Image (tube, rainbow, N blue to C red; front, side, top):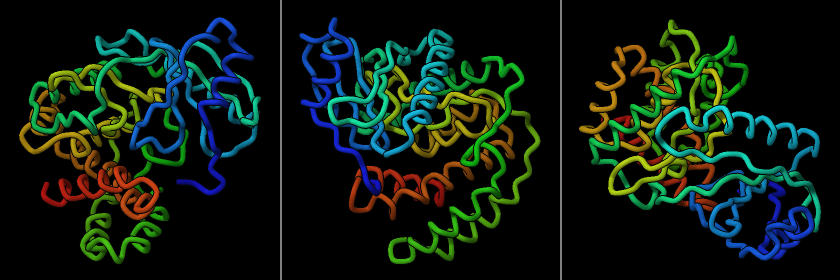
Length: 295
């Protein structure tokens, strides 16, 4: 999926775990096939743990800093809502031919929303609204959005969207989508930053009997536009439950439209980028764009 992507095999993971965490040496190592995973290889350690290995090469010190920040974010979110989220357990170091630090966290039971689609479930939409509200209630402690991606100024995504439009000419109605972005990018920002999950896509959501069972990939917890987590409305829900989510959150027209804009900016990058390397992720982008164009 990425240039110079790292290869992580069960044998490598078994060696790393055995060398660095001998207390887990006898536990089975099982690859986890999250079809939409794009930045980590995930392996289950026994029944209760999951190891995450970055797939994109990088500087060891920088990757270690990122993993520590993700662990801090995971610890900050743990227990703040009634929905389970992974908790940090340990940080591993390079070895056995793998060149980067890696992390261990708790394993959560449940079925990812890519498999158990909750799109028609009003109950799931209610749960999702409760989770988003719980995350927003976490004190920012003065933190504000500091990144360059989704969550700050919509216009900062212009360059990325231009690239996406250029690469999508053969698969999407680009003139129509350009016109949509021309309107989205002008939406004003009035609300202050709140805490957000930042990536509420189907592969990061666990479902049980049509209800929200847990939320994964919580290391991106941070202050951002309150509309950012509304991407879930179009990534995860059909029209009826989507309206339930909006009603439960009490979104006004501006916040809702900014949520559409962030979902659009994320979805536009998926069909062309992952067309050959991760078809499920490409299909997610197409489905989200279809929902956005149908409102």
